Image (cartoon, rainbow, N blue to C red; front, side, top):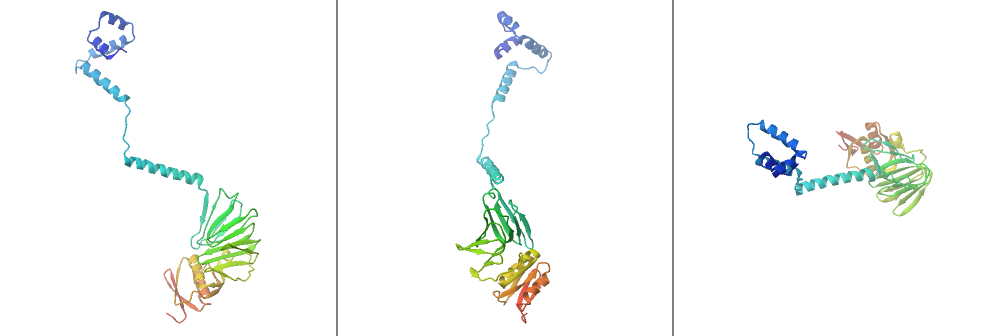
Length: 304
């Protein structure tokens, strides 16, 4: 198409004979004639050709310009926050291979490990391990109590806040609670590291630490821990530890009023009947109890 000045000259019949001859040889003439024809049919409103052309040109130029928006700081921080969330999510999905299992009050859970070893968690316990590294390093972390049936293979490690238990393939129980750490070996050989000292446990042997003191423990002959049969058993254990276990199994709060909680208890209580469990603990110790909602008050005989 010709430039704007030539188009206006054509509309106003201002082209020279030579210019008209050149225009007739181009493909633009037919288009211009159609425009002129339809324009002639429009009597109103009259259009100022110069103004219309300028408006048309300005509109075309504005379409070609790229809109630029200023990125203020609020927008920048919002975008940055979204990127951080996306990157964090991507890291969690692709690089975080920690598997965790947890039990609540009065709950147990069985966990199958990648090598087909089995772990049974007692109430209020937590187990975690790196699944991606499991083939190279069988290691996990325990908070609470669990019974392990370990498949034979390379060293299997249980890390607790109190100590580390290592085996090759065996059955054992680990209990790590506040001021209490105990390991019982039911099969194979168990290695326990406590305060940089290592102790080997054969079947029927135990290692126990109460309030930071290593205790002498009698041999046992059970095939597995009693809590697997919904019963907690104790052999010369301070009453405060027995109370803590009652609270975990029944979701209750026990207060001992005027009672020596350091006295030792030997016996057991069931996980299926709260009244029977309370009697099983208090009667041998010559204690009484009363129930106030979810709170149980232990007190000495004859004291109200």
